[in-house]
Length: 366
Image 1 (cartoon, one colour):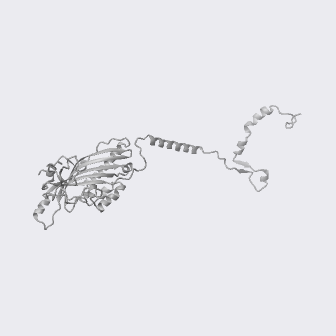
Image 2: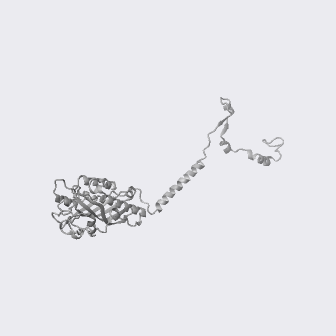
Image 3: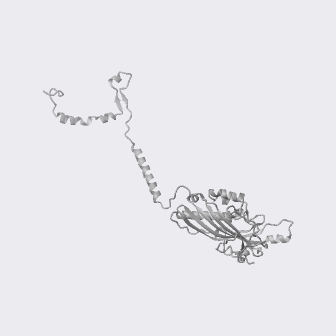
């Protein structure tokens, strides 16, 4: 007899071995059944109000899709590349700006002539007979040196610093509207925001305290006394850039500016002699040594920190206050009092007196 689970005739030929193997490909295992999207209602459920015989099952979550996995991998690769480049790039600096800008320290030294200021009707003759004969005109006298990268700043960053410094010098020393005292905004917009309060206070309340002299920020004349006789201002000087630390560049500028000035035309009631003198021009010399500082934020925003301003200017009278505006001595005028020692603004050495005498050799020989 066969077993309790076997058919009466016994196991068919090719039974458990061959028959089971024959139907193995169409037998669904438990995991396949659980994953099915359709499920048949039970007999108990079909006796209720269910019209359809099957119901749809919620799809089984199998983890991240292939597209999501690819996206995660791409993000990870990009993030890793950014970190690698940040570590390896030699000129990558910190994202934050540097420490607050220092206040500008300034010195303005008037230079008094030893005699009468020479003058002439022809400005070209004045320039040709002075030490400024070989100077270039305007911004051409402020050439940019070849930029060389530093340990933490690229060639482009050094060039940018030099260009901003030149821009400041041009605007503060050569713009006619600045020289006459009518405008200060062309200079102001180039300053680091940390220095704007000091700049504004200098013009609102000028003081000879080494911090708040408008003539330390820019060159401007008393427009009620003097005017430009020639807008072709002569200039000569140098620019040098150097790295002070990993986040700071400094540019040192040393330039001499020579202006041809003429007295403002006298009123109709003045004597003819005054009118003749007003027609004569004279030279006025300003030597400016400026120290600029830049962090990466300054370079990005095209602005600068002016930290040192050392100015010699003449011919001036030591009796006149040169804090707010320069009051040039013009052709035929003499100073009321002089300084303790002769100072030549064309020389490279610095003066230490608060008022000096303008060296005879610095005046035109007319």
